[in-house]
Image (cartoon, rainbow, N blue to C red):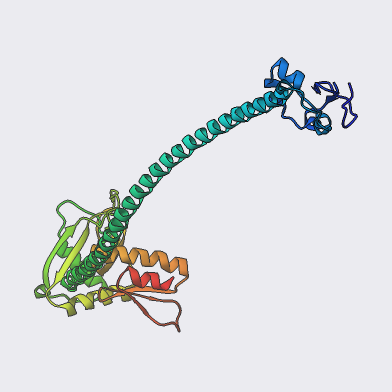
Length: 318
């Protein structure tokens, strides 16, 4: 079949009830859905645009106008059906919008809860910041007190000497050992110069800062407390001038062992001295020594002498 208007092939077409021409739905100017809803009588009475535009024949009776009226009624019904479908779509969209509103309200509620939690968190953060500041202040106070306590402890040891490396022998006489050391370095010590002498266990190799203590196989040190600091300084100077003592020099039994005589440092200062030795090697410092229970370092012969009082002084060298 050929379309009466566009002259193109048509397979499914509208048929004019007057001229019996076949047309595409678009060429006929009628909706496909509307045409398909028509009954057989309405389809038979349907006219194409050309036939509808032809001069009207004189009306012979009211019955001649019935097809046009019927067609108009059909088109109105089709329009009403389409309008009903549109209303259904609008109703569905309205339900969707209501669902969206519900979701939005839920989101607003959740956002409100989040805002409340954020306010609580900000309040807690302000409290944490204050606690951190208080903790920092407390730590600074503790460090200051520890330094002051260590200074007092070290001052109380100013008249003390520590002798390390002396083997422990059954029935030993520490005073005789001390006199032997004095004789070797050419120092005469009066009995009145000696306040006390005893052995103490060595400072744990694990450290004074809470590290695990490891067993120390070295013999306990001998602590000598003098009544006069001058007597202590004379003995220490004599030992340093001699540069080296061994247990064999004192006539002690057993293999010869190297002896060390030094200021009696607090555990904290011993740990500080150990770290200073490590830093001396790391930074290639030339000198490290202890005098009057204080630790000193010097980079070279022409460099400034640095006093090491605490960990902060070591950190400044890096």
